[in-house]
Image (cartoon, rainbow, N blue to C red; front, side):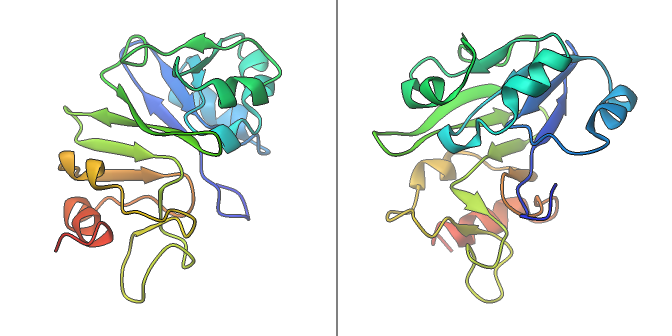
Length: 179
């Protein structure tokens, strides 16, 4: 995580480590060497193209983007591979959340680990949350993303703020206004 409270994630899988919406920070490569071999970089939100190309080149891996996300592809300076319905070699399913001319976003779900990764729509920064809540919806999102209620996570990984590892399902329900 960096000072602006943007977060990227390194997901360990049977195939190796997938980096999601990476932010290139000092010490990243040293940390990744401790975690495992990087097998791919996934970009799940159109404004999170960030440092994906540079990190992927250093690790000699492809950048992957969900096939429908043309705006995201346009913002990259490399040809991206399509993710398909799962991240290759992993149990992380790829699900479209938002796809329009101004905002593209996909989420990842791992049923075995009960982990939901939402890169932009959910966050833990104070600008996302109501007082007392640990998780909230991005201030630019006008309608609560009720489709996220499909999952019952133990962990919610976010792209802005600190991820949730306790009472995640309860926090998700509250953030969606379903409690």
